[in-house]
Image (cartoon, rainbow, N blue to C red; front, top):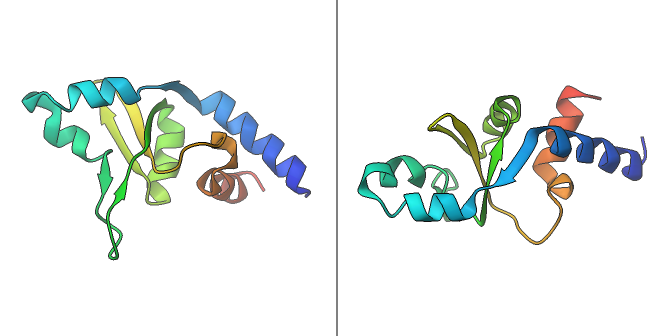
Length: 109
């Protein structure tokens, strides 16, 4: 399969499963004591031994994609009925993220 075909298929996954940028919502709610600890799970990933990874963006996604991202070690929580992903990259289209290509390769190829 060509790179262009893979990117096109990854774009389809993103269009079907990534719904809305909720970075501002996460930022605002995380300042409230009631939600602070729960939202920390999608703000900083301490699983990396070298240094923690910080989420640069937050996205409301489908539960299906949430499960796949969790399998890949991404920061995902279910919060007030929403599945939220703490994305550690920014500045490029989501379908170009290596984790999306990994999910595509594992579940569609």
